Length: 337
Image (cartoon, rainbow, N blue to C red):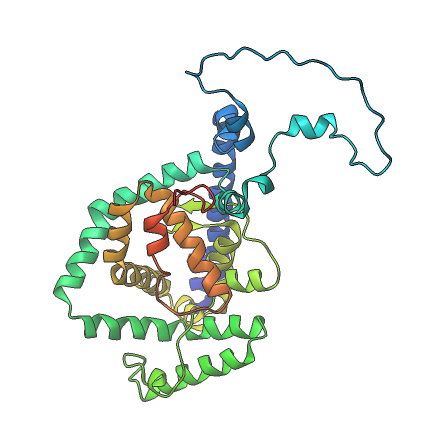
């Protein structure tokens, strides 16, 4: 029996590994939906129920006597007058539009029906950040000079250029695809396999793309907010795009898989995630220490970052944290002047 056939019989193919990834993502989404539905449905549906909150009396308020109203003879209603409010409108209570655009935007920003499950996963990730990843990232930043760290991040980013190029083309972004191609060619040669970002000095700016962004450009909504173990903040669209489809767009992954070195690909993915976390660990710590609810602040930060990337708004920089730190959970229309 030939060596390639023995190798195929001995280990799963790349498709098998990727479908295992898909099974993991779908299982996480299923568990999230299961635990979200199994939680206290009454509490889950009333946490953000503004109508009930506004209509219920204060628990310590004294009952007030109802004033006596003298009935007046009913006047005929002119034909041009506004029709009376229906009973259904009265039962529905206060509309979000009546509270201003700030409240409506805040409710849309939440979109977190699986919050009980997400907070459990968030707590697990925070445990890893506090006792494992965070100390390693701070030690890495202290031991390695910033130019060396930046060069290593450039190298890892250059390895991901084929995935970025494929998503540029799938989105119809020919100009950005040209910039990605030039960056890959220039940095892989003159930039010493990507350690030096020579292309940026020549005017070819760096940007990030993934299949989650491609699906957004094609019109697919993000769905509900989802926190994955280890991977962190996400949503069904981004999880399926980045964890399932992007690996098929990476030629390096195919090469490593066909040479029995797929572990190197997993190591590259893990190291890339670690270096990205280390680059922003100080800002994340500032957000954690300054937030009344770090979970909600991180959820808002993730959505800002993804919306900026989808709209081609930038590269590796985090969004401005000042609005999140100043007014994290208070809608503009309800904040004090």
